[in-house]
Length: 120
Image (cartoon, rainbow, N blue to C red; front, side, top):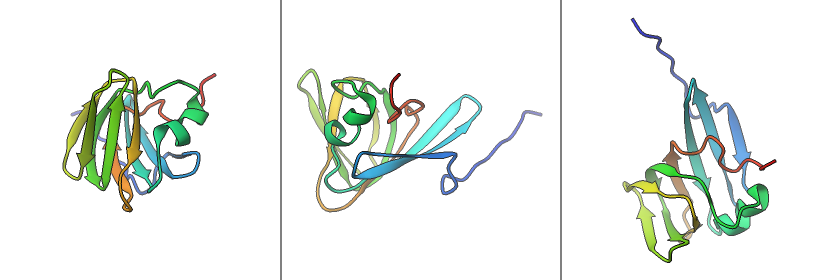
């Protein structure tokens, strides 16, 4: 029988604070990492994460689901999409994003092993 391991996202291994508007709760089990991002009203990647990582745009390959709130993503190629509760997404590296409205946007994301960590 294989190894079974469970964890609760409400008791994360780490919480990565954004510059001003939210945080990412992270659990890692073996080679699998899951994050629950809480993007508060006013959050924008270029203002809240760019100063932490130092890249011109977000270089994370995101894969996940939006469970509440709304976020708009603008890719470096000029395309744009808006994600809302229930939307499953795959977002290629090279984008900016921002929370829309007065409600926090909450997303579960499997592409965040290095997200919002300072680059060395």
